[in-house]
Length: 136
Image 1 (cartoon, rainbow, N blue to C red):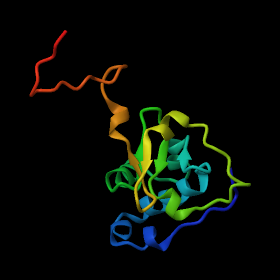
Image 2: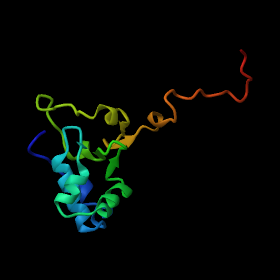
Image 3: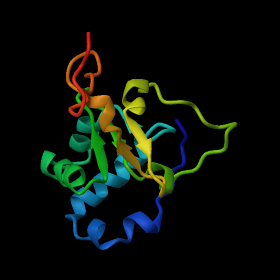
């Protein structure tokens, strides 16, 4: 993990960010400092407690879309690619490959959930053509 991180004013100087409680804003910066090179944080609850924030502050970041939570407990910082750009010779891929595979980058370099990855069951469901009957 790198020792230096950046934060873009395009993210943190928006009304949406500045209207959050200052504790939630501080939590965002601390999470950003602990993110791996792909923007994943393995221990967000530990960081939240360590800096004196609450789960309500984390919930503010989640509800406003600044972080993306996963069932594993890992979070992804949505605007990671806007905030940080590492040279290829310094980049180390994330250990959280399953979570990373569940994300896409939109045109503005923000992470979004790939909803196709979250179908119920272990196999993708077959789409049925409602205009033509299935022939077996």
